[in-house]
Image 1: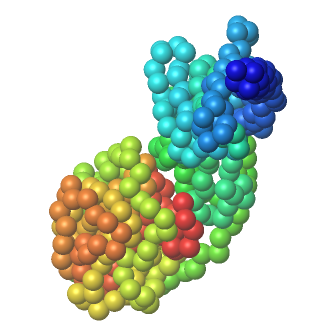
Image 2: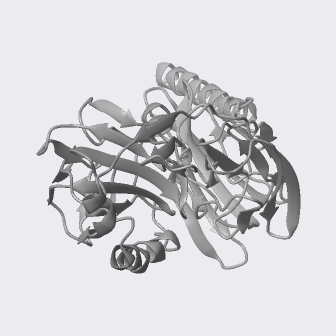
Image 3: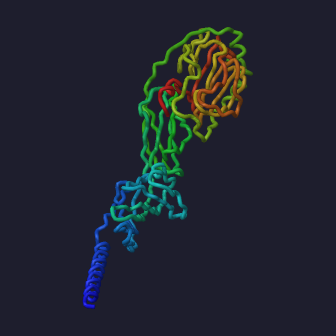
Length: 413
């Protein structure tokens, strides 16, 4: 009996000690520091708003939940003067972004996917982010809630402020939105503007050969703000060419009223049309395989001993009749017909008003309205129209402002 009593006392003491130990251990669990990393948003530190963590001990036999919610009504707000946002974190973050003006969810994905996201308008956005928490004792989730006041902050980049005659200048405006109005005004007529997949607006300015080499005052208008700039056009050395064309050819082409009227009626209206899409990709390619250039871009040409020259708006590639002609880049066939002045003629709209012209071909392998890819067969070299022998006349223009096609072979716009 005494032995049983002693055993009971011992068990009771052990139980009390175990209970005290358990209570003490629970207090330790609840008060032990939790290291929760903040996230970094566009170089700004964002504190967590709440967390829910479960700690596991003794192979899960003992668990403890830790919860925290920041009840302060003040929410961190960032000023974002760009159309992009970047979140740095220890673990992958799930993110939801909502425009407060419309309550529209504009993004719902991961931090990795956020790298491709672009704000397309100025607004205040509510951003909710969460990431997994894990340490040697347990796991859970940490939440971050903050707002971003996304504002326009335009930056203007001009590819070359001292271009030569015949070059193409690219203007790119960053830190803007899809509905931002951007235009270029001045002596040169630019291409359409394009809001590209990087969230920037791009415009192309043709520095045509018939403009004098001198400074030209230009301006970029971004919504209601005007920024002046100067294009200091440098002189290009153009060659001269004297050649003879038979009277029968000139009478049926350049000296023919019907030929010139037909050309004006069919081709001149295309100078003003512009496709809003950008079809071209990367560098342009030569429309024929490497062939001899018989007449260069911008060349002063004296025909039949004329006292004043005409100017050559493109490049003539001398090649045997039947040589294959390829699309210099992606585009839409805007014109594909025979004309008395230029023979079998193709015009490709590559987008934004940038067009390529192909004259004097022996055959046409595409029709008006076709969509073509870079390197696709479009015709064959010939000697139709105003021509002295088999060749391809090839030119690139923006609203009848010719530029040097050879420059597009080497530069990616």
